Image 1 (cartoon, rainbow, N blue to C red):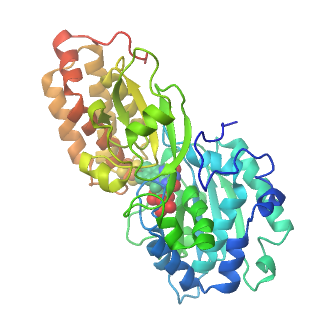
Image 2 (cartoon, helix red, strand yellow; image 1 turned 135 degrees about the vertical axis):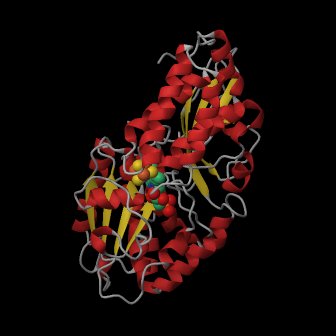
Image 3 (cartoon, rainbow, N blue to C red; image 1 turned 90 degrees about the vertical axis):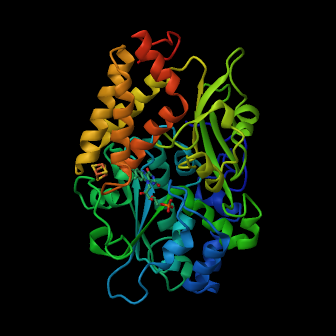
Length: 431
Ligand SMILES: Cc1cc2nc3c(=O)[nH]c(=O)nc-3n(C[C@H](O)[C@H](O)[C@H](O)COP(=O)(O)O)c2cc1C
Ligand code: SF4
């Protein structure tokens, strides 16, 4: 089982308490009071206004404003409206949703209920990564409890509002986390992302208006409705309010989960919270937000972890999965691993992505073997630039950005491979 976060805040404060995942334990700590407040004392529009005012941004990677997304759901339609909860979490370096599913399944269900009331959705489909057997079992148990005690199903908490929740497990494809790939998979098809428009709010699951949100995004909502937008804005930065659960992995003394306000400096997370690196080792580079986000070199770790600051350094917060690499690391090998993943996971619909990911991987392999040329570095950049922003979904961008980041900051590693005719980092991790 995952260890509870080393630093806790409102999302994770009860994670260490054994009964918190149960309905009884959740109710004992004030659970479902915010959902009751929303459903019995607030109109759907009032809920959306509070979430908009809170400035909550989606925690699934793109950082889209949540209240605004909810407001896109059509108000006058005869069609049933749906929510989809994205619990696919398949990006290497990202493991924050897992702990929420394991330790706070009722918080997620409460957030879903509030979102359902706000958008007047009749059903939520929770799409959970298939490998998350234990988190999915925890969630399934919580769903059963919530149905049994009237927190889900007909007449939620005695109100006139009804809501159904359906849990579905994926089959191990990263692209099923892209929101329209998720919808396709939900419908029993291959997770091939859809062309947009139409956007899911118009044509989503089974052709019905649908809002897709990440697990963590839903989990912030009960706190916002319970405590108010101003309270939420007391955490984080002006433009990026709230906390997030950072997952730190790689060459640190204390890898794990840390719930901290957005805007916490990256060097504070790596050196103070995660305990820095083992004796004698120095940081070489840090991926700040899951494998698709461009890497930062050691000299740029003074950045606050919020998109408005990270963008200035040509990277983004992504999923908050921080991957630390020490000075033994070969950045060509790192690129080899990254491009291997994207080559394998591309759904293959777009030529730039299908061919580009494979092409980039082949070049990384050649450079790592010592058979690369200087021209290969230019080809890598050229291929990456032709993938970025050109395809049906953002997967191709996510595959191109890390390559661009590695060449931006570690070009000397690539050139050393070319000029030595072999990898000059014998101590680096093995492929
Ligand atoms: C290739 C790819 C994979 C993605 N995987 C996930 C995922 O596993 N979980 C997730 O919440 N969002 C993922 N996203 C982002 C979703 O498309 C979508 O933006 C998100 O679920 C919206 O939720 P939010 O607004 O609450 O952040 C992925 C996007 C792409 C392009
Ligand atoms: S960008 Fe890649 S993953 Fe996305 S639809 Fe095109 S081929 Fe599929």
